[in-house]
Image (cartoon, rainbow, N blue to C red; front, top):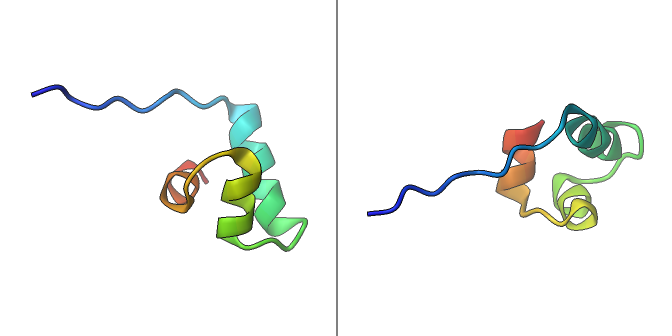
Length: 46
């Protein structure tokens, strides 16, 4: 069985994703769509 690996996300990318939710008052789903991630991946990022 192959183990799935997650891509390494830069600190800058993580900060940008968090700012979409906090500063721009977007939902997790909206921010995830804007960043090209699914909502679970974004939750694990921030």
